[in-house]
Length: 509
Image (cartoon, rainbow, N blue to C red):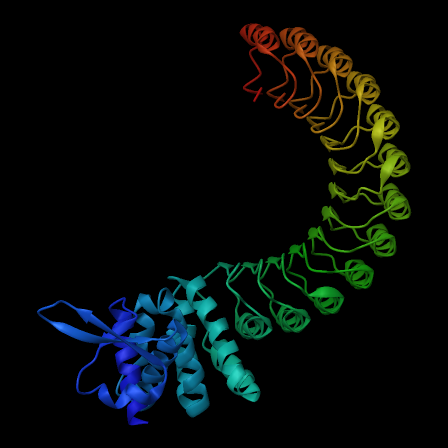
């Protein structure tokens, strides 16, 4: 043991000096046969020396952590001073992690105290993300030593994590796993000040979601919870659904990129039927198909509080869109719907939504980007725009829309007086389509933003748009980037700007 501690002291000292070796002296002779070192001649001709180098940096970090752990356990060193040293949060982080694991294997009482100190550091709001990350990594290190100890350490961390001085907590990208989520949940259960909690891009699974659900049942202050980029799955969604049934304070829930499928969507649908506080739900980038959307649609028919629903980047087809369309006919609270990136919606789905928009009186924002709806789908939506008055924002980017589709939109924009923003980027609109839209701009007085970037518009189309800009006084932003407009087309647009006093943003890059 004496030799191990001696090796550890040399390891720590050399790390603090930024070196991977230490110089051999009479104290190091007894370490020669340990097998973790190599010996090299160094120094100068006048002062030659033998350098003892660790075979791998991991060995050096482990023995440094071993030395620190025994100093802390024997109370020769106060580990608060170790945690206060910012070097252990950065370059010497692995040393601190090895130390925590060795402490856990030797003294549960000291390990408990270690996590209490970290909890207080997290509560101080200075480097709170760094200390939360350290806490989660340390929990993993300790659980690898003894599984049963993790629960008690989580309890020690959670009970002393005081968030009473905070209203917004951001622990995104801090390596939080299920155990870390359990500690946060314990703190939330007794907390009445935090209104926003961000836990994006961590490693929270269904068990962590279950812990957070228990906290939501007791907590009445949290209004926004962001769990995007985790792995809660259907089981985690089910747990959160149960919490939403009892919770009446949460207004925003972000579950983007969480491996949620139809079963999870069905569970959330049941919650939406009973919940009357949630206004925003983000389920983008999951694996929800037609069955899951059908369940959500039924919930929308009964729910009157949800105003924003994001289902972008899922696997929704015509059957799912058809269900949503029926729901939109009955629902009067939803104002924003994102169905972007569901490429199998297609023309038929657009036609179905068109019928719903004609009857709906609440939806103001609709994202259908990346859905291959084509000219026929745009034609159907244009009919809805002619009759529909509340829609102010429509995203139709990346949808294989050509000149015929742009012509359909001309007719709609001429009659429509509510649409403010239209996104048609990454389509196949050429000069003829630009001419149609130019005619619309001459008559329309509500559109303020038009995105035609990444199309096939040339100088003739630019000239048509220039003439429209001379007459139009409502458009403030026009994106024509990455088209086929040369200097001649750009010149005609610049001349139009001389007469136009409303356009403040023109992109020709």
